[in-house]
Length: 320
Image: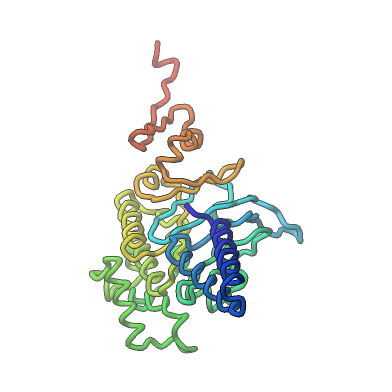
């Protein structure tokens, strides 16, 4: 995987080589050669899969006027066309990281680089306006939407707010995007239903459809499988993987469903006190990182099958 630092080096390489050639042959066209090198760099970046890049990122929050650092020195990337799952124990900072990536919380140090496919430019998260970010990043939070007397079409239509006027009136193009989002998430059969009548699994699919209607290249989800029964967990995770691959979305989510993430994620981010481990499930299994995270007394991680088994405790009395 080529990092953002590597891209900068490649850009510098383009500049050096082309300017050296220009000085020898076409000394009067240096500016044209710089522009050409820039185009080559951005063409190269567009051919890469990285959409979000963390560079020496420190995250945290402000408490009583003082900044509290939750994690620091984070370096990683999230790629288009992939489902990336964030794992870690409770309180390690997963939600803080997600909210920082979503621009809900300010970073403490470092940079978050975000690629805009419309302009084909890379900029830090803070360089984008709120309006620009609303067309680049979609967010699905853990909280259930507390709405009544609203149909699923109306809720999904709220995803079009970055494109509508003050009154939020949908035009024909907006309605087509709503229909497309509903179709992609497989909830056509729910059309006409009121949101408060849906099951947790159905409601979560509607929220994903709302994010799709927003037409953002990046979608972040905070524990999307929380509160769901197991079949619904599987359906939601399979849907997100399908959307990442078929729609070339950059999908990043936090979850406590470890075994499910290992089965369906293209890439894993594992947050620990010692830092952030990034790799495919197989890579993290081979290095022993997953076993260290998962295994406890009575809990065993099986690297070959990417499964977890639990052995019930046996009391001393039952052994007599």
